[in-house]
Length: 74
Image 1 (spheres, rainbow, N blue to C red):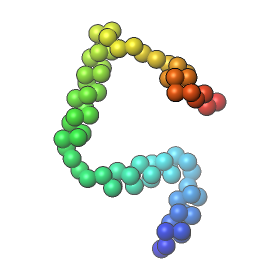
Image 2 (image 1 turned 60 degrees about the vertical axis):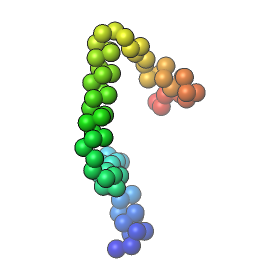
Image 3 (image 1 turned 120 degrees about the vertical axis):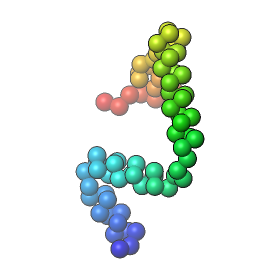
Image 4 (image 1 turned 90 degrees about the horizontal axis):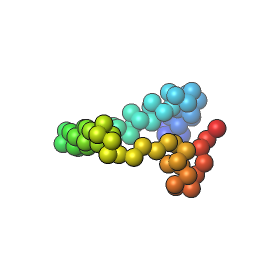
């Protein structure tokens, strides 16, 4: 099967299945590195702790998008 044929098959899928396939495809190109995964888990834990202690400022999606000059999708 050519890449053009594969692309046509993938684009014919429903959006949710295309997204799932895209994620799987991207993940397949990443080298496995348990250290990176653990580092992210540690960082997420630190961020959750800051939220729980009230040290982090929470922003709405609308506020975040406004800060970067974009508008929310409807």
